[in-house]
Length: 276
Image 1 (tube, helix red, strand yellow):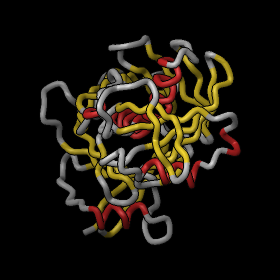
Image 2 (cartoon, one colour; image 1 turned 135 degrees about the vertical axis):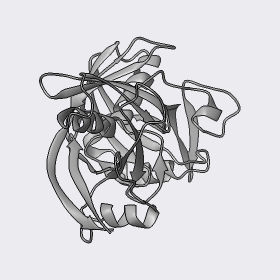
Image 3 (cartoon, helix red, strand yellow; image 1 turned 30 degrees about the horizontal axis):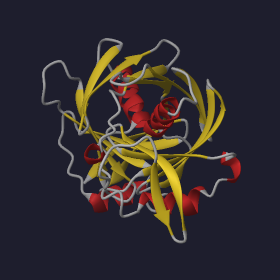
Image 4 (cartoon, one colour; image 1 turned 120 degrees about the vertical axis):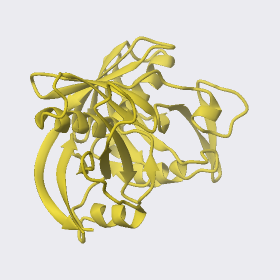
């Protein structure tokens, strides 16, 4: 079966988007892995599948699959690309768009400059919600690794995130340490791991190792998690410019119980068809 696809990216975090709004698309882990393969398929970090919404007032349901075939609850960069896709094709007549994900309803606002602002919802800190094996919530947790340990913040924004503060992200052991934490027994569903360098209260540098993918040029939920973690530790203010390898995201968080807002670009790359 041939299916049409659209290739998009948010700061280099790239996606193969499949539009199943009018015709159902049968997808499974093996097909996702083939689509994501940069030699044998189209190549991407995640596959995004659009399906008809299950609620009134919602433009579409979107599902997110990592390159390894595993389905996850949400993707900030992916949500921006979905909003831009729906807007550009007339599937969403207004700039304000609501889409449905495993993590819940996502509210987005398409801007005239091409950027998209996303209401990521409030972060969750209870260990069972992350999920993480811990007896009580804490600002920082000790994660044992070999002969030592690292201190990390942990939270959920629809996906589990861990954030480490480092002196210099350029030389941080993202591949090795990221993989060790992402697959650690403390995180039964795995975790995305952010390495954060704080420049001042309004600027950070960030690299993110994503579970099931590896390091990506940008991770929207990872940027949000880093700002939330930094703000809880008294390191950051309510609005922060996050510099990632692929570019910049603008993250806002008012504090406990408040939603996190992310603003960044969503870019169309090309379209095509592939046999699945």
